[in-house]
Image (cartoon, rainbow, N blue to C red; front, side, top):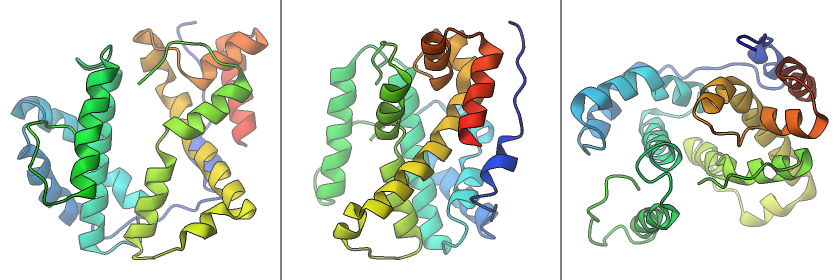
Length: 228
């Protein structure tokens, strides 16, 4: 079909997570805009378009509303790194080169572990084409959306130091899984059209269509009902 209808997802998720926004968003945006441009990840015109289109500053301001300026800057830097790397491996020149993606991420990991190491000549700090079942996809998507990284950034943004064993508590695990699903499923709903146009079917909507043998709108409705 040429069109499909989607309910207001924010209206659903806001029942669990009322929206808050950081008052430091504009200030941090200007500072980190210059920071990102300094790495020459893209040519200047593409980099500016990437920043203006993505508006990662707004994403960070809503994701970490209680962070102070310094912590919010780091959180926004994380988003710039994460999304530019994701684009590189999902649709950039490393799309079919997982070994090079891993090599680049290994460089990034080395910088985090050893801040005094030599700065690598790499400006960025995966995907398997296989249709999974709904159950398999939920588990797989929880592992690939980057939720654990975001949880760590939330902890950092509030300057908390939560003991590692807390994250092994069954209640905390269940909370983490629920918040991850609430973050992931709307992402797949909103990105479905672009991804299917790119021939990328690693999307929850596609899994539902395949397993339940339904058309697009019904699959969309099923996933929205699951979210609700």
